[in-house]
Length: 434
Image (cartoon, rainbow, N blue to C red; front, side, top):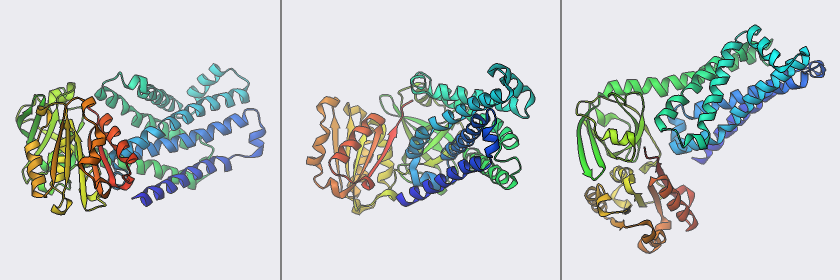
């Protein structure tokens, strides 16, 4: 829904403009002309702008269903990453400019002014702790450091951003020139903070807890599918009432020693029945290897479902589905939702025959829909993706679904775009293996 994305961007842009405008209109020419006035004005404006963008970042990953359906999980993460440097940079500039401004006004050194502000200004100790936490999270999230940190550790540390924003809230309201003697602006800003916190509490924590308790999921069986690949069979209550589509995924939290505190995304490899769910996992890292060792009876908490890699995204009658390795899980569950008229063509890419997991199930589902399955097995150098045009001559008239590791998905989607597949007909789900 491009119109919805554009509308959201307009609303966020207007909010950003109003935030900056409140900083501009709260200053007087006399204040700007005073010693340190310009620095303090710029410090206030950058602080407000940075905080506004930080709250928008939090909203993007708060799992609000309507936002997730519009942008998709991958889209939300892309926007989150693009936006991330701006609030951090603006808030850092805010701190530096405010210190410079006050030191110029008081005619003192920077270090002396820092000590004075922290010890005498209300809520500044909490704000300072929040700023330190925010800079620490930003440092760990830098790409060259992020690649060297395990996902679960980075994720746990990243949660301190919530605490950093909470600690910063009071000093903004009490000290910000835009709010002193401006009660309406103060009320609106408080409502924005409260709404953001409410979305996070409701959708990141409340709804997953309620959903997990309602369905009571436990591990029933760990089934070997191929070397290094297992299916986890889960039993629960009223699972057919989950509003989940084929191709979607959940964040899974296995409530056992060493795993309960972290959640990882895995796609359903089959649509749920009334009492059973299935996910299929390839052991490529510490967490996925630990999943393969789960014991029957282990309780499971879920967050989701997420993702727009579903039949609802279709724009055309027919479909071409391309999977790389374990990406077949999304393709297999998606097939259950496709009508017979889709006449799906499925291309399964793997390094060896043994890596073509769930092949027999895919063949059966495709046969019911009068489609075709192609197996591409061998080293990457031996498998030429441009052969797709020969296998599926009408690919430009089909919706194209691509699922697999991020590198594979990026290569295939770029090729499809160059070969003339419209953007609205190209759907993908990229996996980060862990």
